[in-house]
Length: 244
Image (tube, rainbow, N blue to C red):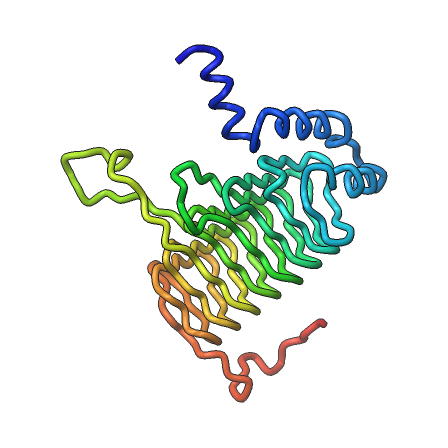
């Protein structure tokens, strides 16, 4: 591969075209590292040149964006320091008043022309610190969904059926993941490709979800299994102090 071919490949993995790449990189260089509320205010204005905002969104310094023209932020959305959004194909949409915490990675790395690739997150949700969301098969996350630190939501999987060939030669699956409203994913939980997590469910810390999770249940373990049905008539620990 020649140097020119290498540069073309690199740019094609970073932006929708050379012009977009230059514009985005200039803005990152000029205003991407400005700290404090001043930097947030400047980016809230100038980043409209490269991404879509409904209303006003807050972007801290040190946030990395790729294919920014495929990113949409709802009013009141917040991207913390160290967040990385890679939004090729159908892109990334982050809903109103949703928070993406430090170190989170939302990645739509789709160079196989997968039809459903993309990440869509509803309103009033929270993506916890160092959460990884891979959207090759499509990830749909509802309203008021919280992921705890180090959660992984992986809508892609390698095929390894043929022992005579390396898995890298056997392709991938990309079935997609749906997480309905009011779900809480515990620290270190993993949701694998092809899974739906029902409304109001809780996934315990460290669980590996390989099958659909019924609404209003708690699942735990590897692989995750239902350990409890959430029922307001049978609350646990009636003596606990609850803050709201």
